[in-house]
Length: 545
Image (cartoon, rainbow, N blue to C red; front, side):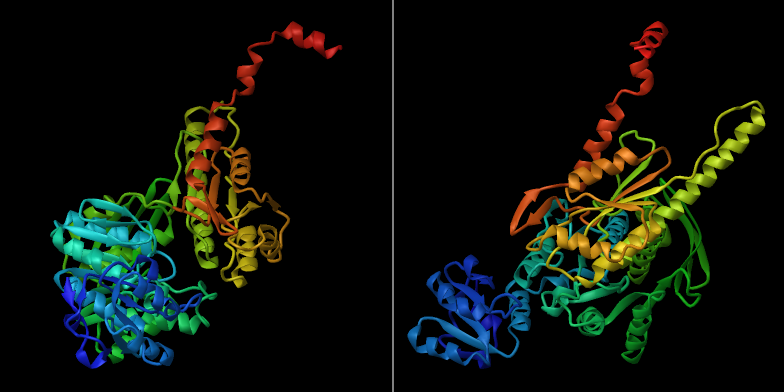
């Protein structure tokens, strides 16, 4: 418990006592308990100032409101037992108050923030793996889960609201964590959820179209991302930036003017401080050589597939270098990284094709996913053709048919009540880069699923797709169509275990649906199995019927 004066400068207190006790902090009136400090936030869907009377009724001892909310002053006289504080920006106030209430926990941690449109989750897990292998006791805040040392909790937001964010950091300190990795979303940066935190390292993965239902335009989206580097990164901290990304280059130029320490990484740019070359990919993972500042060169082996994950590995390795972690520990951490749930997650039940679940829900992420799949198909085809040639040399009388080229079968849809502009573009990308596409439903939310699908179809230029609105049936059909050497991609939902329609959520897992569909094909009797029940004479007799 704290006293109000310990959390807020007395100059901001407009009514009531500065010594009032504060036992909890809330920005949702429904979570207010006795002696809570309630902060009224103005959101896109609701104005927290409308819920101040309810917060008081539930026992709030302090109300923090916007200084421009003049009507609130009428409550000063009506509730003399309650203290009122006014701020120009209540979101920033909430962050500052939360950090103070929980004892500024980020100051006791090596806090690493990861932001970008794609790659945040995987990069965060790789960084954590490197830190773990280096002897750090580590925590993680992200899209899939929150990890506090050895304890794992479900995640409800990529970056939670300030009171929860600071409380998690405090628990990490209590569990004797040395470092923490946090995914920092653009929404969180816009709403200042991670403000008043000391980030020692900030990582920028990339920036492509997304969330334009929330941000005004790409410039606004970029400005929100940039806050992590220009406002939240501590003096003496390090910015880690993908210099192959156009917005990454802009960010590097911005930070040069601020005299911020920057480590760049990339594949294409020869100017990158940390660069990958000689990249090789298979269905089982990736290998490449990494050059550090043009001097050291080490071979990296990762269980993660595709060029996208090479970038994620580079980002993590660069963050580790910013913390002066030895290259051998970086190599171990990369090699020991577990496959990340819903991020190019392979479903392997003994089938002879590759089945993958991925969170790709933006046009750029879908394009990267499909390009990765095409690279793997090509690599697999080359390996099979080489195997065939070697066998032919050993057995010149072999009559085995030539290995055909594998095909990519993609299942995807788009979410409702989100950026509509990307739907047709994702349709065009899926059709152009896949051999066959099944357009289905994602999370329609409050939109008509069929209308969402029609908007996707407007971008499709090729006649290589069908529409199956039922996502479970669509996944089953993709598996039915798959043959040896193919890749089945189920994109859009990744780790999510629900479908949302008209405000209702029902359980649904792409991974489980894919597993069930594969099990059916594996257990189905083959023609040879059926043939054993018949004899040639039966077949001849039946032929004359």
